Length: 337
Image (cartoon, rainbow, N blue to C red; front, top):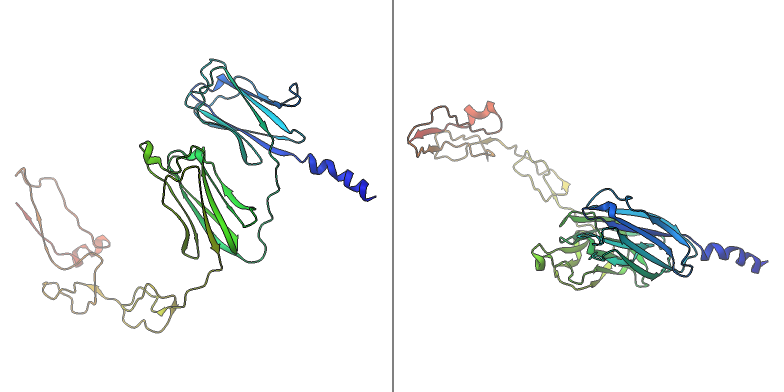
C-alpha cells in the first residue's frame, strides 16, 4: 500500500509544471521577429512558438509566458526575417525565475539557437512565521536596468526574497521594496550580468547604489559601483529596539515646541505671537515673541531700472501669508532709480 501511494504521487512530484517566460525586446521592426521553443531530446516536439507579425510594438519588452512539465532539455530558436537580428534589442528566457538564456547583443543575422538544460525548480520557502523585522530594500539603478538583480538568503541558502532584473524600468529609477525578514544572520547579494556592477559612469551615465535598512539603521551600504558580477553582504536581522521616550511640548503653536519630542508633557506654556521682534525697526511689536515666517520688520526695498525708462505698467507685490496681511505686516519703501 505504501509503495502504491508513493508511485501514485511520483508523477505529481516529477512533472510539476514550470513557468517559462520569453522576454523579447523588439527593435524598430517588431514584425520581423519570431521564435520557437522545443524539446531538445525530442526535436520534433514543439513546445510553443510565435510567428512573424506576432509582435507589433517597436522598441518594447514583450513577455510570453508558458508552462512545461516533463521536459529536461529545451532549445530556444529566434529568427529575424530581414537578416539583421534585433538591432538595439535583446532577449532572455527564464524558467522558474532563473535566467537560462541571456542575449543582450542581438545581432544574430537570420537565426540563432540556444540549447539549455531545464533547471530544477525548487519551491519557494514558506514565509517566516512568528517574529519578523520590517525591512526596506533600496536599489538605485544605473542606466542598464536589465542587468541588475538581487536576493536575500538565510544561512541555509534559502532565498527569502529576490528582485530584478528590471528591463521595463526607466534608467536610474530607484526601487524601494518593503518586506519583513526573519531574525538571524542573512546574506544580501546583488548581481550584474554584464560584470561592471552599477558603474554607469563608465559609460557616460550615473552610478547606482543599494541599501538594506531596518529600524532606521542601514545594515547594507553599497556605494562601490563597480562590484563586478556580484557582491555579497552579511548582516544580522534583529528586532527593533524602540528609542526611549522624549518628553516635551508637541504643539507648534507654543514657544516651547520641541520637534524631537515623542511624548507630550505640560511644558507648553507660551503661545507664539508673530510680529517684528527687532527693536530697532519702527514697526517693532513689543508683544511679539516670534518673528514672522517672512521677516515683517520694515526694511527698504530698492529696485533698479538699468534701462532708465521707469516701471511703467509694472507692479510688485509682496505677501506674508495672504493678501489681508500685506498692509499690516509689510511696510516697504520703494525707491526707483
